[in-house]
Image (spheres, one colour):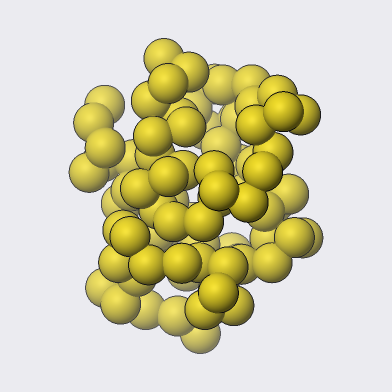
Length: 83
């Protein structure tokens, strides 16, 4: 599974579960999800649970920093590092 596929899966989850008023086509891989208010701290926790289940990875406490959840690209990179 590559970066593009992971980003598409993340877009779908975010627009369905975390930001239902957002359009997946409007989410760009390098735009800040935090600054745009698409996800917040609660959203990060929901996204984390989804990532761990969907991609079968474990994110450590040290990796729970805003930089790792700032953009779709950053999240995809975090997931790819775990495989």
